[in-house]
Length: 81
Image (tube, rainbow, N blue to C red; front, top):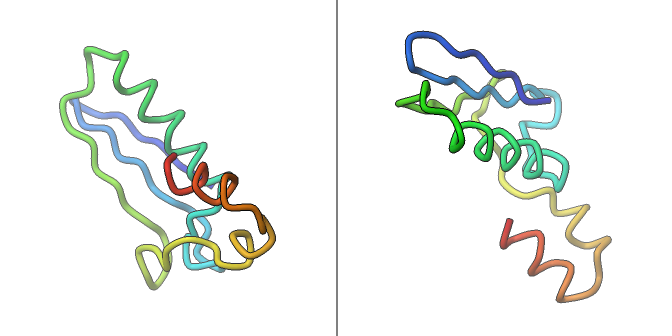
């Protein structure tokens, strides 16, 4: 879902769910946050590039997932990640 490549101080994070247009699901957001946390604690990374496989970069949040949450606090928690 999220690929990472580190080379010469540059970290490339590639969203890899092209069949879903790299939707920002809670799972994808957690993967991104985990990667950012790791990068933040590293002295080796100076630049972060966010890329995506497929035709489009990212179609945005997964609206089906948001509709399924039904409770405002859960939706807010997803957006605040």
